[in-house]
Length: 238
Image (cartoon, rainbow, N blue to C red; front, top):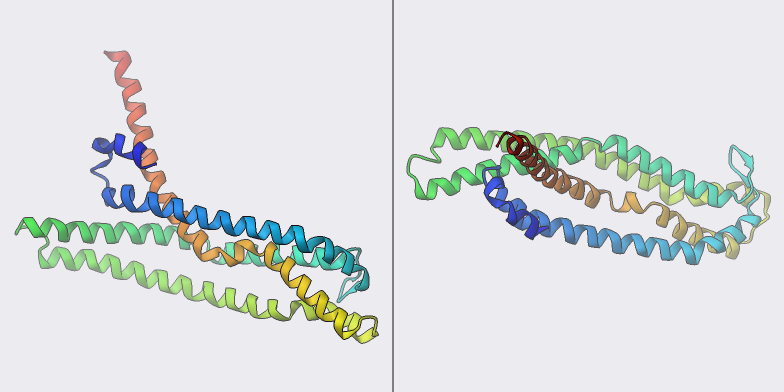
């Protein structure tokens, strides 16, 4: 990625914060993708180990609350509950990647003006800095606001998630069809499987950061695409 962008540096250098994107964003994109890939492999390996056990243990819990008898109810419940949580957070946090992307742009503009001011006394004047920092502050306030209700929704989901396994076992506990040892085993295995299905929920903050980095790098790609299109138009005329 670094070699690809540096090869087109003369065309990209005018973009706001270009140096940071080439040096930092490519590094962060690669390292973040590596971390998420490692976590994904870990989730898959956990599923391979515990999903067959949960399928077997589901025979001891034939009935679920509200819906009644469901074959392999614990497995289905883990999948549905994880999909519900993932969908909810996707809706609640839909604006976060764009705000993070904009945050990097306004910070880059402010930082660039300060750098110019080190060499040119006519740059980085107080009115200009106030205007640029006002944009930074305004975007941070918006970011804090959206993260506030996103974290409220995420924390509420995780709190309910802590007792969701016991809620599913409630009919079997009342009927006396499972022992304390079996209940503990089912709860532990269900927690492992559910946690693996909740891979995106656990990695959501990292995913938001990755999406914002992707947006910034895509702006580079659009510049290169426009350049290639212009070259194709110019060549036939010559």
